[in-house]
Length: 227
Ligand code: HEM
View 1 (spheres, rainbow, N blue to C red):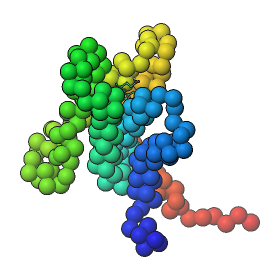
View 2 (tube, rainbow, N blue to C red):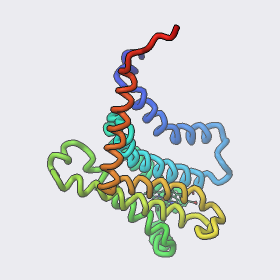
View 3 (cartoon, rainbow, N blue to C red):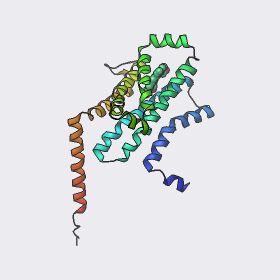
View 4 (cartoon, protein in one colour):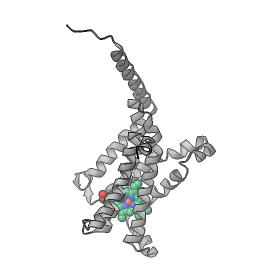
């Protein structure tokens, strides 16, 4: 066990535990009969929320590395993105199978009637090529186009927030109803997108280099013994 654990960093262990926590808790709640009175809706909502959270975490890796120089975060981006896709897929399967019993005509009718489902579908379809090409072999094959393709995530994330907010009964202008949570996700994504703007990114990188320099300098100062 010790040998097995030593192969992973604490961040890696925390990430995998967090990613699987929703599946584990749902299974436990099903097994103990403590899931809500509307289990299908509960499953749909919790897998959807975990998908968007993991997506946001994967987007946060680059800016956090730029700010704090924590390079390991860059290595975790892919797994976080793939976990987000896994939850989005489970979310969609619950919708088409558990919610609609694979009744295709009914599904098509609902998709056409509810714009927030069209937005969800669009974001899911756009996530597929990103998940499929997230492996190193595709990075090599696609060259510069790989980066271009994966920049799609900055379009997908706001789409998912729109899907989330629209699925709620509420008013974004008067902040009534269940709109607060999607709004928080929206603000976080907006901040992360702002960090992508080149001058802001450069400012962030220089700020982090400067603070690291000051930190190192402070730690290298000779200690003065106090009497
Ligand atoms: C074909 C694609 C999709 C379909 C059909 C779909 C369907 C749904 C439905 C029916 C709901 C409302 C659940 C309810 O409140 O009763 C919902 C909510 C949600 N979906 Fe999706 N969705 C899709 C794609 C996605 C994707 C790709 C993501 C994230 C990456 C996502 C994240 C969410 C979130 C966060 C919610 C709100 C959960 C909550 O109420 O707390 N969905 N979706």
